[in-house]
Amino acid sequence: MAAAVSALQGEPWTPLWVLAVYVLASLAAMPITVLIVVTALVFGPAAGFGYALSGSLLASGVIFALGRRLGRAAVRRLAGERLNELSRRLGNGGVLAVLVLRLVPVAPFTLVNLVAGATQLRARDFLLGTALGMTPGILAVTVFSDRLAVALWHPSAVSLGPLAAAVVLIAGGAFAIYRRLARRPR
Image (cartoon, rainbow, N blue to C red):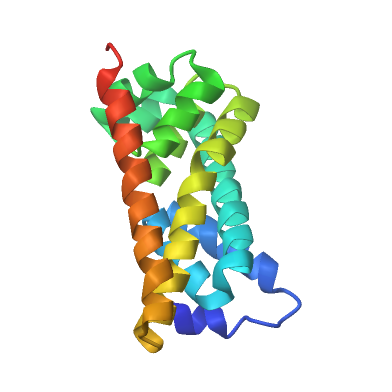
């Protein structure tokens, strides 16, 4: 995948191709984290972050619209038992509910998008919650992927230090989110 994507670098249509890959891969239910890692490795942390966030938002919007178009009954057949739990979590929570679902992924990216589209959630709230909730994770994954690649290709104290810092920050953030959610009444 990285070789195919890297062939696009420098081409004028590269941004459109990257966005198309995100949409098509998400429709095929490919894990979004894989796409983000490949994007970061191919384009570097800055451009990779921009492409990953844009691609994730476009893909989530397209699949949200598909869920809206298919309706609750069709999505129920596809999502099965997870529909009720995800619908309950999204409920009328709007932006905050989507933000929490994106920070603590409880279901695959494509499934969350599809189910959200089949609920009464407003598209604006969904996209805003998705952008706010995915930004920290995409940033962490792109920086981590870049630092890991540098440490693997050029191992030294200088390259391993930032990698270790990235691991500590990611683990600390995940732990903080977990603790905060574990204290919330259900």
